[in-house]
Image (cartoon, rainbow over the protein chains, first blue to last red):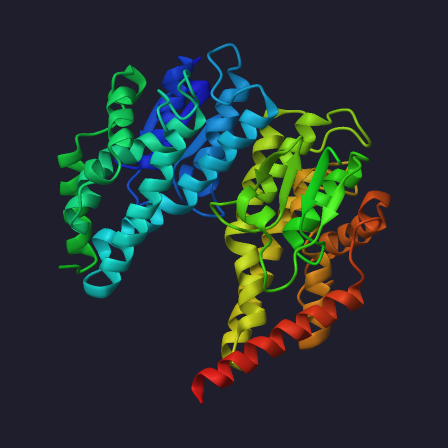
Length: 219
Length: 233
């Protein structure tokens, strides 16, 4: 029953997109509910009273919050689809470590690239390029972060691929120049329907950030 | 050559998490403490990304980040010792992991902020934030424990380990700063949980002595105040 799975989300959210990609990879039918964050629904407030944030997956009435917790939950419940986390404990630990790295680093530093100016922006740019290089080194010559199989780390990171244009334009650098393998990886991921149907055009994301900049008075 | 090594010492609550997990599983390992202020070559080689403890080294392969390490320990030694640390069903696993995120992202930083606060006002604000976080965990405990002793029910579970590692630090800070953080009046269930947690054999085996944590906290506070004073001179 599709109604048994509901995703509370916002179209542009890279965190929500992680969940959408995972659900698509597993072929799970679900109801997508777009939230207006300036006017949060009673459903959202009840499902995530601690943070009042999206995404929230509601499965048979039970809410699951935190995008990477949701992705793991999806992997465990719909276990007959292709695995998102590898079975081998060491490989699984590596996947969790890198998923956590993406979680800790990309969004926070990326946000500083469009919110800040001057010295602070230069600092953020330096840090962001460093993050890209660490990921580039970790990816190496592999097809995906998980090796031959698209998996957890790929899902954690790929939504930000649509944000690279925004980050590099605001920061004044080129992602492709700093991390060419990562860009090639992003393009490979976009060949998967689960990803191409979920990510928005980078220009649309840039336009959205332009709107946020006005809202926060950044210019 | 020990098959299992752990870099760090139990004064660090994140290292303590992994030691509790290893203790629950009755895994033998070699503990490799770091010297304060210095990072060993082994640490730098094993955790080049963060250069932080804990690092578990199993058959010469490093695993970093305490939450990742505990899940790894649970997966590698599934039936050992007391059985599974992560709950059996997917929904409860999601809840334990959600609250672990909360503890690491919100609760722990507010605990640190209490220790670092330089004005009475800042301290009061940090204390209130921390207590608010604990009150949420009180509610979560009532729901998850279902009347039993632990977040994991009858057994010590993932969230017990991920939160319980801070108990000795909370108590040390209460003593040094003359504060009540884990208020018995407003958090009776958590208070009971602390007693059960501390009494558990596997936890007792690795929990650092309160006195040692108090001394350590006093020492780093003094170091921080001195650094601040030197910086303004």
